[in-house]
Amino acid sequence: MAMKADMEQQVVEYLETHPEFFARHQSLLNTLRVPHQRGGAISLVERQTEMLREQNREMRSQLHDLLDAARYNDLQFEKTKRLVLSLLESETLDQLTDAIEEGLCRDFNGDITNLILLDQTIGERGGNIKSVSLQVAESQVAELIDSDWALCGSLSDRQRQFLFDDRADKVLSAAVVPLVKGNTLGLLAIGSFEANYFHSSMGTLFLNYVGEVLSRVLFRLLNNLNPE
Image (cartoon, rainbow, N blue to C red; front, side, top):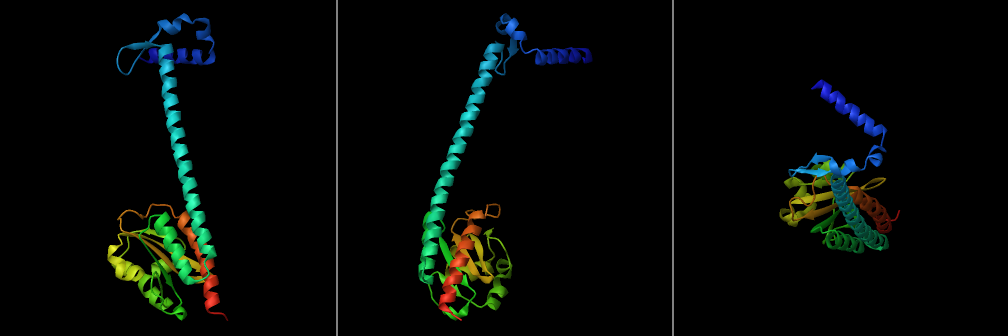
């Protein structure tokens, strides 16, 4: 067996170092037969043709996947651009929450949004925005406030109740984005009625980007409401 393996290796090495061998002995291409996975045998030319066809199919599949990814990324970019422009154009907190709900619910398929502000001076506003003190928020969701990144997945009953109030029972998964500009300004909560729509393994690059834009707009609006 060892001698056979050595001889096979010598043949392999010879063919690798003499690629012109079959050019000088073209008749061998049609007379040599190789086993086929479906049984029987085929010529080296047929085998090579089949391999090229298989490589072509794989390349077509990869190209199809790349085109699908490109189309998806283009669509996501357009949605993100539309949301960011709406946030930047907001002149009031009501306009801001409308832009959040329209962008994240209509374009990105969230079901519920809520903006929680750690500033009681703005008073109760209703709708998709509420204000609480930092002390109250820390007593309920300190782990969310202290985070530097968006968090996705299922929430505890306490967290859901704090973030979504009377709509909490409908929320089966959520994304929570900390809003920070110097100090923590609040939280953006996005809820879904689907259990796995938001999950812990999903990427948060988009959410963190939206959070950075929203934090800057929110900082401006709050300063306009509470000038020094």
